[in-house]
Image (cartoon, rainbow, N blue to C red; front, side):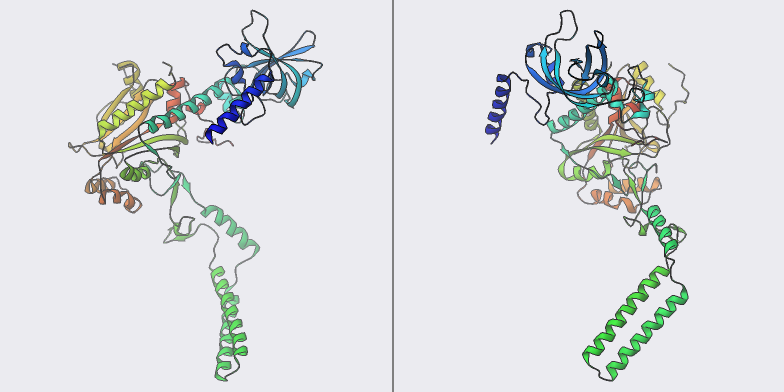
Length: 523
């Protein structure tokens, strides 16, 4: 079957070439611009062939007293544009030249005049589609726009050179991530976005609940259909009593089965009506409570649930069966931070390795970061505001000093004080530190955080208690230590921070397509 498909594809290309046409995209009725301009000859070898292209006008201008127009067209398939020339006799040029206009045209490729930067251009002889733009209203004019300004137009900013370039780099690094772990025998595991356990133990989690929406619906329902009064409920009880007495009398009188059955049906309906009335009479507006606290037993999941801050705990369960696994997905943190390094929604790459210790974990993290940097080239004694002393966590200024001033390269810091790290990190023999590590890189600070996990049941149980966390949500996690425990380790890489490192951009809000942060959740 594969051979037949290859033969058909080859035949299609031959037929297109014989007809003097550039082959179209497999799933689109047009030629991707990348397929024309990204050739080693810049597309000049295609001169004389016909092509249908579509894209958005980056810049457009009329020339020779409005006799024709030059359009710089980009379809997103590459960073480069294709110059399209359209005569006024072909289409109304006024609708084509505004920045942002979408067009699809048929034409023939030709060599441009000597001395121009482009190697090929397209002379249009037919306009098939125009998605017009009103220049007076289009929010992305043909001027230099700041990244801060573009954050107000996240639905359009991918049309700019910077954001589209970031999207391509993000795509490349995501592909590199899967390639690296696939090449090293890791299995990709999808961990849940909704969780009932706090991985970090910091409590900065978004809650998932239907209690508020259900309370609003109930309040509206009760306003339109008030619950029955006690008098109405008592009247319904009397009806049940009367119906019950009628059935008893019929049975005593040895009435026919038909008569008794009919009365029994009436009694059943009366009981059902009473049950509904009693249940409805108990309804009260507001959030349900029990013992003075919110009754999460009446919530959608019958318990408190949150958006995950990490897939680590769940993916550990697969590591303890499949050895080398990783998860790569969105995570969430309700941290009211407005810095250029924090988002409320971000993506994490989190591998877990069974039969591995902290050294193995650091080696894996280093190999992964190096692989990413090779895949996509990265832009290549001090007084601190925060005092440096034993027992504190490193602030961003400390991390950047270590990487940018002291060593001037990425650095791994390991064996942190246990008080500032999570409960699941393995306690070292000194009983003061845990087998944790961070990979710090210039300009960004912490890129990777990881540790050897605590595999000893009694120790991790003690650590959970020391940190004041409830045991019940972590019982399943403790099971991994109760049944066939194994030495294992893992880490998490903040994917947006990796893109910051790769691109040299300053603000993390510019390297994720739709940034979420305090006060903003557009679209």
